[in-house]
Length: 85
Image 1 (cartoon, rainbow, N blue to C red):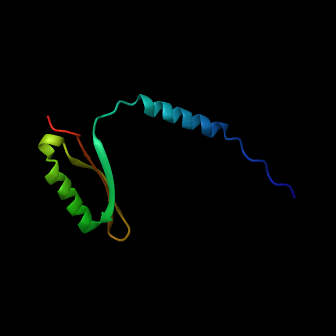
Image 2 (image 1 turned 120 degrees about the vertical axis):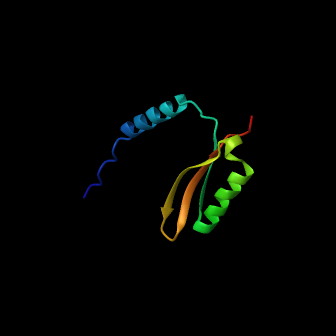
């Protein structure tokens, strides 16, 4: 019984190269982001902490994305500008 030959990784390497090149030319939007995975009550408190510390009017703070995971856990990403004008 012979072991099958390993598949070529050339196509994977090319896809990675294209993806990295595309990401390199994307303009940076200037926002700072942080992702949290917390139980619902703690997630709500963390979001409130961010909004109190960096007000939306000055820092454009917002919950950029969120999703609910099993066990009443929330994964969410907060974003804000690094400084106010």
